[in-house]
Image 1 (tube, one colour):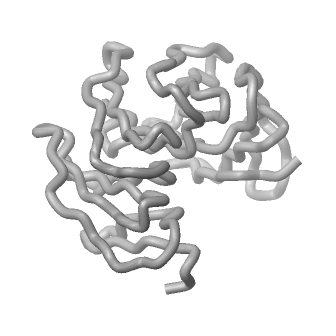
Image 2 (spheres, one colour):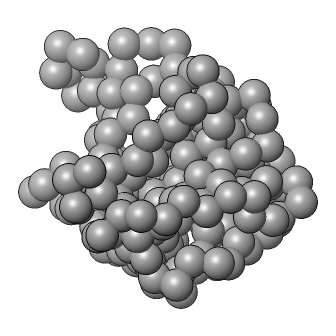
Length: 189
């Protein structure tokens, strides 16, 4: 079935894929399958490697996020805090926090050291489609179907900037290494 997301391993020549077939897989760049994970009850749509490279986070239409230790082939945490599908996950550069973007109009921040939800970020009025961390900072961005992108401070829990102007849903956001960021919208702008 369709592949909905991919993530590049931080140190090795591996790529991880998330699929509508309820699985995630890790591949070499030459196409050799290394690992496959099952455990979600609906399509898998978000995937992110931990910066140390031995863990992986996935999100799903089953409204859960799973944090996998693929070296030992086990699930470390299953987060069930969202009430609708979780479109995207991201892990910050220190590997301490995982952020999620959900159809329930929220973004959540999970502390990976204790396995608990730290904050719920509210402010979007439609599905939050994507989340991305800015490297070496406390800032992350969310892209939403409400046609906005918001910047959040994960320490204070506050929205520090919202960008308006698109005519359709914004599906993706990403930071460049030099602080600026990009986002993609259905309105082709």
